[in-house]
Image 1 (spheres, one colour):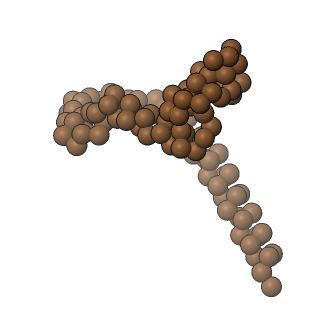
Image 2 (tube, one colour):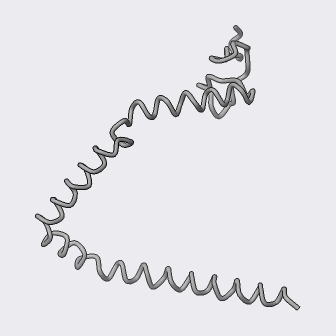
Image 3 (tube, one colour):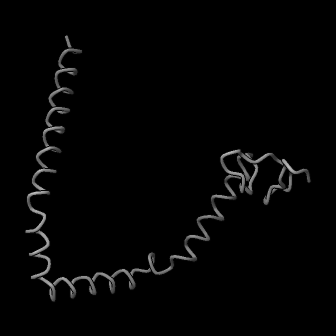
Length: 113
């Protein structure tokens, strides 16, 4: 194996890795890329088993509900402290949204006979 080339982890052929991904392990062949994606999904799922388990999700939701019910005053103070910031954000967001929506309808109307 040369310095520039690497051996594909799936087909065993030598390939030149991308200059942006020097640690690349799979060659650009579609079948090797598909196998790499499948392997990545399996690794992710094995690391995040709790995220996929419905019982764990439900337990986490319950825990969050209990925390929120115990800390209602904190949440109220948090919202109040950021009310002006949120209003400013929403005002700007809605201006952009309305402007985009109005611009889109004019363009659509101009294109129709």
